[in-house]
Length: 141
Image (cartoon, rainbow, N blue to C red; front, side, top):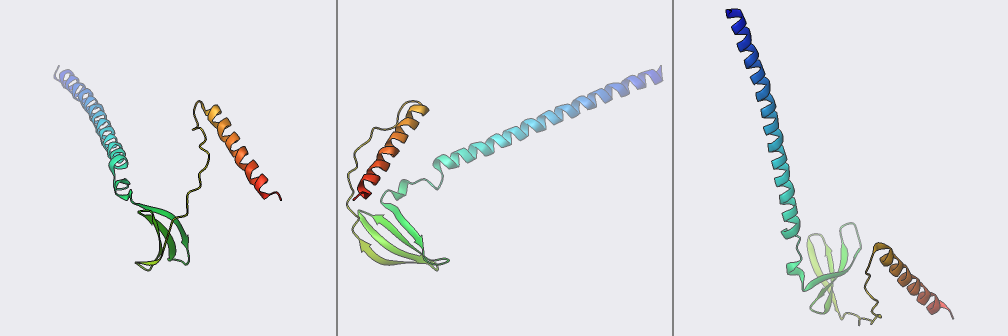
C-alpha cells in the first residue's frame, strides 16, 4: 500500500504541477496583454495631446519651402499677415526679405461635399471637370 499511496501522491503532485504551469502561462499572457494595452493607450494619448499639437503656431505658418543646396533652403513664413523670406542652413536662420502676401482671389464657394461616398465622388469629379474646362477656355485665343 505504501507504493500505491506514493504513486497517488506523485500523480496528484504532477497534476497540480501541470495545473500550476497552465495557470502561470495564463497569468503571463494576461500580463502581456495589459502591458500592450498600456503601450497603445500611451501612444494614443501622445497623438492626442503630444508635442506636435499646433496650439502655439496659430500666428506662424510655413507658406513655401525650396531647397537650394544639400542642407540649405529658402523658406517663406507668414507671420501676422506678413511674409518673411528666410534662408535656412548651417545651423542658422537668416532673414532675406519681407514681402506683402498676395491678395487672395475670391473663388466661388462650392458646396461642401456631403452624402455618401459615391455622391461625394460624383461632386468632386464634377468640380474637377469645371476647373479643367475653365483652364481650357482661358488658354484659347
